[in-house]
Amino acid sequence: MLKKQIIMFGAPGAGKGTQAKILAGKLNVPHISTGDILRNAVAQKTELGLKAKEIMEKGELVPDEIMVGIVKNVLFSDSCKEGYILDGFPRTLNQAKLLDEIIEQLNNGYPVIIKLLVDDEVIIQRLSMRRVCKVCGTIVNLNQIENPNKCPNCGAENSFVKRDDDKEEVIRRRLRVYHETTQPVLEYYKNKTEIIVVDGAQPVDNVTENILKKLDHSAG
Ligand code: AMP
Image (cartoon, rainbow, N blue to C red):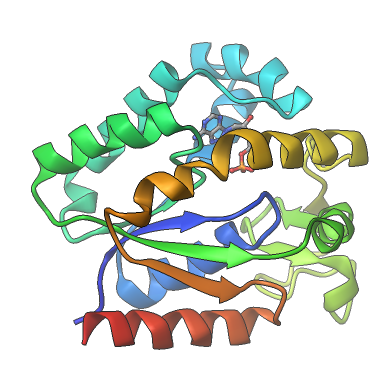
């Protein structure tokens, strides 16, 4: 059986969200995107959203204690009993260590890491063309869909919106934060669990196929 406790790792724009959504459907476990949780909180103007908004707009990181509280709540919910796909968490060494405590309490196996590799310049190009369908949440690249005014998933017209943090100067800031703070977290996992590395610059279907092949291999 394929491993169902998964952490998606990689730079912003590497395709973590896209792949996490697909894998969640195939493995029948929830996709937990801390970025999506925060964006919902911002849209609903909750206390969390009010705190997170400015930080996110600058491309910086929301404090660890807030993030760990959010993730703990979700991971302990019934929906995660069979597994989970974490997308966007952990992003700091401290988050990784606190996540270890949660994993130990859950007593449900240690997650495997899927690392998507993509060059920074490709990411900058990708993110400037990235849009999200405001009706169904599908993430698209305007260069890669037939009709840039129609969602290929739900068919909605003129439903694409650009994320506030997908502006070039914010993208560069987010990439810097990734290289300085998040990438070192991978070192922490090297002796703890399997890290599956996949070329994230390939077309979406190929990336999924490669992930599933390697997951299958790791399970066997
Ligand atoms: P994402 O959608 O994963 O790119 O996240 C968007 C933004 O949400 C990030 O640039 C951060 O400001 C914030 N964020 C998401 N996840 C975390 C996290 N684990 N730790 C701190 N900030 C986060």
